[in-house]
Length: 107
Image 1 (tube, one colour):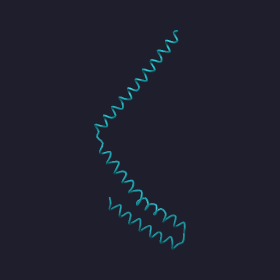
Image 2: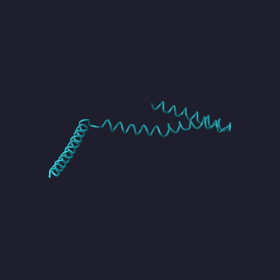
Image 3: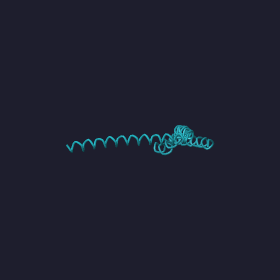
């Protein structure tokens, strides 16, 4: 993979230099915009953005591989239990309010 990366950088650099030289000889801005700018953008992507993206990807995948599945399942179960308890308390409060309203209406 590194060989392909380096060879593509060399190729893009050579293309950029030859197109840049031709653009300066022709003194043509349309040629410059059509030939040199896209190559410069591709080179910038390969030199700047791709290494950053690959570094982030390797860090994220490393962290994902370090996760312990048993602990993850335990935490999820605890969260579901806490949510169920909270829902039960809300239901009990609503039931109490309904009883109080029914008692007031009977009076």
